[in-house]
Amino acid sequence: MEVTIYNKEGKEAGKLDLSEDVFGVTANQGLIHQALLRQLANKRQGTVQAKTRGEVVGSTRKLFSQKSTGRARRGSAKSPTLRGGGVAFGPRPRSFSQRMPKKMRRLAIKGVLSTKVTDDQLIVLDKLEMTQPKTKEMEAILNALNIKSSALIATAEADANVVKSSRNIKGINITPAALLNVGDLLSHRKLILTVDAVAKIEQLWGAKQPVEAS
Image (tube, rainbow, N blue to C red; front, side, top):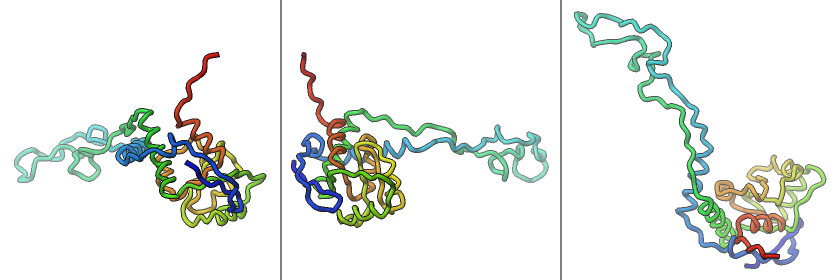
């Protein structure tokens, strides 16, 4: 699969062959949905807690006599039916984390990457380097690439200057190629990869080459 490589000025700078094993996979929508739900669930802290009637601080004295008052039976002031009392079925600390086999996670990411290619939402950049943070320079690059919506830019390694140059631009996010995930890929319309980032992605999620015996 061949795609065009662009430079910072938005001009063609060559061609690049993408690995069919990573960028040519048939997307499994159910698997991608499952991977997204897992990622969102793993972000939840699960630390919320409400006190039960046994945990509320207060007197356990019976408020009034059981009989002869003509009123409903009443226990202590910590009853869930009274203001300031405990909560009958309140939330308790729990873990929302979900597990997913590595092969399924790999296939989900490759499915989203392949969809970006087929939907013409992938842009390959020859390189993205900055000597110092410059938001105007990043905006000029995005305009040259005709980016009119949200975009996720992946570089081979983390680059502080690139991150600082784009953090004030709405809808633009930077990530190392190794940290690409289904949630970020789906929440951005365009995906911009440097040539080095493509190589990193194919190394991480491509077919493993057999080691030759020496």
